[in-house]
Length: 486
Ligand SMILES: *Cc1c(COP(=O)(O)O)cnc(C)c1O
Image (cartoon, rainbow, N blue to C red; front, side, top):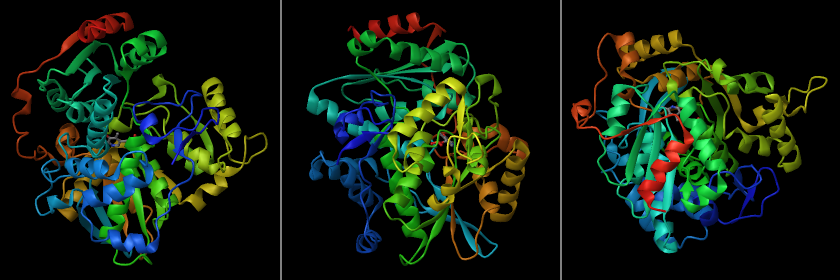
């Protein structure tokens, strides 16, 4: 299996070759040359597998240059109940991503698929934990090392650090805006004492952190010398790891392959829902993929109108679902590639237009760039959005009527899911974080604190380890060089 760039001007690569990288050299994103197909027989055989067994079967279709025995070992070690132990009372933690029936509504069963039972209480662990083990495996084989540089406003940074801590050949340099993360998220990251984890608190805002990462990455000589890599959501292995739980959710919610289910996905950079699109392209019987956004509704606007219009950072809202506060959706190009029937020349032209004019228009209106918006429905895509008031009301309602506390991102998903039910088609809402991570809004909605999983009770009291640094790329470069000795 080889991987091609959505912009058509990079040579095809193998899974291991693209594993440590981000963008293709031509600025595009990698996708498999063809999506592997899953037959009805296979799907039936997969019904009785453990999560790790299922992850192995799906990954081996994509990671064809990693020996089966190694992949088996990596998936068994990654998807073990000991790592995903933060399940709700009553849910079976050994399922890794248990389904929780929320309610029956409008003739449809509405489920929550728990994806946030891992070490950092957000769904990003599902992919990042595998990435940590895959990176270590490949780096050991190549006798190489990697220095991961990232910027975070919360969830990505902690998921990356918990996945990479103690891994041979890997250091993590994570930039976060000083005093801008929640106390809980800060404590999660800064309490790590592993010598290969470096927390840099930047005297600035999240955009400054991102700008520094960009500036360092654009210094190609420095980047090569320091062996700098990233783990952002465009990483292909992260997307593949996420494909697994769509299969898992489908298999848990159905008894026969004649049945279809829909998924609602709280979306920001389009990484999570992109995995749902890929599962569907592989033949998983998905009815609809519902993209749920918050006030930062770039994606909802596209699916409603066909106009993709990225926002400036000053136009980006700071919401109560901060992990979805994005100005553009970095994985969206993968879907557009399929929507345009893999016409890489057109994709390249459209995303050049995004860079220079801020967007494109596939509405089919006079003067637009195409009329492919009408095809989105054939790919199962629809969308919706929520406001802060919607999320607060949904958290309250789900607590009262379903007896479950959900976080603000998941509340966005439940609100949008409820508006898009079809009788007889189960709806699975992906739970992207546990409420303890976003306690401020839980207090607002419920007048009490969110419950915390065991072991997290006094996390804010643990000793913290971080270095304060000015919002300056040169200072960050010097910091890294001093630690790597390269
Ligand atoms: C990252 C994140 C999202 C958005 O996921 P994308 O893959 O960027 O669409 C939603 N909710 C939470 C809690 C997250 O951490």
